[in-house]
Length: 317
Image (cartoon, rainbow, N blue to C red; front, side, top):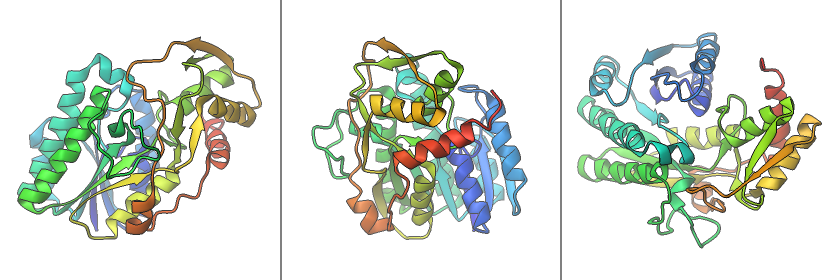
């Protein structure tokens, strides 16, 4: 099959492209290589993908420019689109809410419109656990009310979920929304906590810890996320939302301890006040994903952190 992967040069996107190529599919990666973090890291991901067997093409394009999408979807007949491109991060979204609206929401509208016009019938879109906001019920289930977003990033992902439903209801597109829970692993963005903390501990620099260390996340290893995404490509849906997580909540202070053990170094902690937009806890209810996707995460945090550190220590620093 022909797959378009938006954000295909990034952390999750490059892994998705690799898994699809190894499965014998043809893959087009669409990415704007923006400087949110060092674009050379994305170029390295692309070099790795080009070295694999199979048909792979990189398209340098911007989701906010509809013409680039029309050009691509007009010349290639795609069987499915996996939409991972977005401006990510809760804290940066508080500083540039309009940018997050433009890229995440308007960019998704452009993609949905281009898909509709050019006959793409199935799209898998990345949402986020952040849509649950401060959710009193734990674990978080897809049927929970989601009107408590506390950051522009979360609000943009909620808007994309609603738009996906519109394009299913009105135009009959097959839409799958995946609420991803704190993904980590090799190639993780350098601004994300696990990668950032590992770099700071490794170099002996202070690690900023917001709050008292009690905030907790459902950290999900990249290979488990890939299993969930690929399961979506192999099944037929109308409009569905699935959580993809580990359903294992890990406190921040526990995460730091695991990184210390894996690196063999002690962290210098820089205690800071809690940050606006941060939720106290995330935890995925996987009942629906197990039933609908056969999704069963296998890598727990005690295994995943050493795997990440093994990759991290082999990178140039």
